[in-house]
Every structure is written in structure tokens, then in C-alpha cells.
Image (cartoon, rainbow, N blue to C red):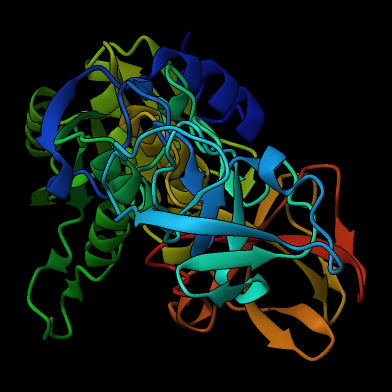
Length: 414
């Protein structure tokens, strides 16, 4: 399936075609200490009930609830305290009625007890506790499996492992977890005018775009293969792209994608005989971007101008990385009210629009302000901490309208 360079296709068609052909392929077992932020490669099931036996919700006393059935202020029940159960200890106190044992929050209960009274709700006389009202069966008792049942899925395949999952796994005695291998993303800058030096000089341009994408790729949980800078020479670009395809799971390129003689990437990708190629996408800005699948390896050809490159990265690079990683990328959607109206550019109003914005927290709730600027403008991004994706059929947004703001690790820090 090869599209002509000048044939613009929708963002949705590109994603619907490419994403089903992309998936996480490898997994590895890592120590629990290294599992944070990784994506679970299989369901993790609990090997036991949690708690494994009845436990106390409170510091207090445990007993058989039938012993308090007739307790009242006028006829209190006094139960002798015959022992104490420490934390983490499986009690071995002899069974019996009309007695109590002292327990702490989390203590396992003797199997002959079925209720707990908090310490502040009883008085004591010598070694006895005095109860003045019936205590129901199960009161302040955490039943076996009350938190987790044996065989229950506690971490699902495709979920990111957070700090709380680390603690849960350790509490279940799991020292290792199987996670998807981090995808490797190759990135190549093209352009004879580019130099890696910070002080580029009048005749050259600093390669400022790639470091941005390197950090965003890392924040998405992927490894980076920096292929450097290739001059505007077909053979040189082709060689670097082939290296990326052989050593990485995804190849991103910046620059060299346009129409006519400047469309070097189109010729490079065509030489690779892609299974899928979309070159020319209904995306404003960045319509000359391209997405391809060479064998089983995806490529995203990002335009040279900053906003066009970022748009292609957000709309195509991030979803593809998410699929390769086996789970979420960390992107978050936040509802907010638009402070001022917005209208699409007249040039391509019916394309998908990426609109950069700044999210604010106010006394009235979350509000968002549109950030405007030219295609080449870097400050559009530095003044933003989120972005909106406006579909093809929307050409304007009203002030006060509720919109969804995308937040992305590394881009937002919000």
C-alpha cells in the first residue's frame, strides 16, 4: 500500500493502518528493584489470599462475638485477657469461649475469634475487659482474602508498574517480574546545513531538534539510538536509515521530507520497498510528514520546521512507541475551560490540528490558554505545557468551552 507524495490522507487512516501491525515483541525478567516504570508483559496472579487469615482492623481485643450477645450497660460482660498476638505471628492460643486476646492493627486472629473491640471502647478491671454492648460478628475484622483473593490478577499485562505495584509485589513475596523489553528508537537528523555544535555560525544551523526528541523518547520509557546528522545525499541518508532499521524498533527522521527536489526522504523510503507508506498527511502543521512500515519496522518522517516535527512526533511517534512498549506512554488527558476563542488557519482548516496550550490551575478550576506562533517558532513549545488535538471537522473552539488537554512526560512537567 503506497500513497503518492501529494495525496493527503487522514491521521486516523494512518494510525488505523499502521498500529495494528506494530506490537511489543520481546520481554525479560528483571529484579523487582528494577521494575519501576516498566510495562508488565504478563498478568501477575496472587499465590495466596491477602490477608492469609483473619486480621484485626484495630488495636483492641478479639473474642467470640457470641460471648457479648447479652452485654449491656446494666449487665456488662467481663472477659479475661488470656494472651496477646504480635504482628506477623500466627496465633497458637488454645480455643475457648468467654475469653479475649489482645491484638494490634494487622494482627492475625485466633481461629476461634470472630470480632474485635477497639481498645478505646472498653474499660478494664485487672486482667479483664468490660464490654457494655453486643459486638457483632465480623466487627473490625479483616477477613481472609479481604484485600486480595488467591488467583486474583494483581498486575495486568500492559500496565505500567508504579511505586504501589512495587510494594504490592514485594508484599506477595515476588522478587522478579516479567516486563516488556524497552523499545529502541533510532533518530536521524538530515540536512547539510546542520551541525552538532551549539555555536553553529552564520552558514550552519544547530541541530536543536534532536535533543528535544531524545528526552521525550526517554521519558516514554524507550532507549535511544542517535544516528547523528546525515547530509542531503541519498546514499548517506539511506545508509543511516538502514542502520536504524537493523538496530532499532522504530526510526524517526527530521527534515528532508517535502515536495519536489527537497523530498529526499521520499526517495530513501521508496528504495527500502516499504510494506506501507503514507507521505502527505492531513495534519496542520506538518502535512509533508510521512509514516512507513519497512518489513516489520515503523518509520516516522518528521518535517524540518519545529512545530511540524513535533506534531508528527506527538500524533504518530508517541502512539507507535506506546504499542512497541506494550502499554501506556504516560500521556494524561485533563479537562479544562478555554480562556479565549480559537480558529483554525484558513490554509488547511479541515486537517487535524495540534494546538499548543498552557494549562493553569485557578480558583475556578483548570483553565487553558492557546499559545500561538509561526511554524518555525521554538517559543510556541517553551511557552506550552500541553496540547489539544482538534479533529478535521472542527475549525473553531469557543471561549469557556471544555476541552481535553494532553500532558506528556518531558513536555509538560505539570
